[in-house]
Image (cartoon, rainbow, N blue to C red; front, side, top):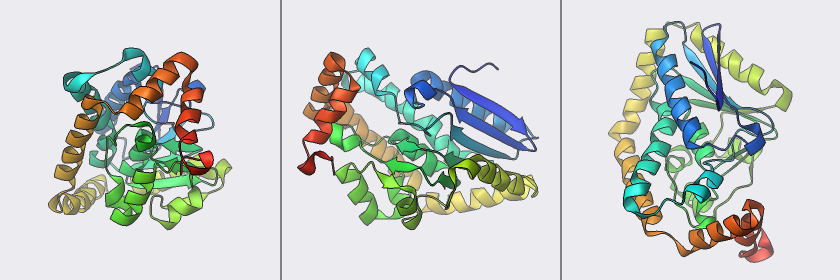
Length: 274
């Protein structure tokens, strides 16, 4: 299959999925979401692939869901947002649910929906230059995949999400459990693929069943139901439309996203958004 927004490379039992819109900091648009879904279908069906690495082309992992696309399409009302949010949610959570282990190799910025994608992976390796964050509430949006509380606990998750923190450095992400380890930027992909090849050498049925057992523990605790409930709440937020989001989008349409982000951050003490 030919992809336009991602790259899919295979070798040594490992598939490497590259988010490939470097001119837009690999912003995740609807085409990319479809292609991620297709690529994971391909990976799931290929018996020679035993692990998956996902990374970003260029200087960033991804800036998150594509606000420019949303700005141009102007979705409104619950009906339009229901389909859009489901299309956002399903490919991201597939990295958690895939029968084969998934490893995120995070270079540069990893924000919003992209942060959720990295958290949904079984293992996350970050470069020293990685920066994480969930800025959605600062511009009137909700959280599509509310996985952060399951990774870092409620206290830290509330602080990050409710303040819209979007400058979490790699060492802090390691400290609070968002990532497994931090490596030099020039060794990031090598380290992630080395881990993937190590797992690929183990009996694939054993790996699959053990991942299933670990995930099942979270399902028993109600993770799946909680994520769906959070998605329903996000549907209410986006369907009703926050005044902050409307103002942000109007500024973005009139003067560009850079101006909208400056307006967003300028509303907070010190102008930093935190």
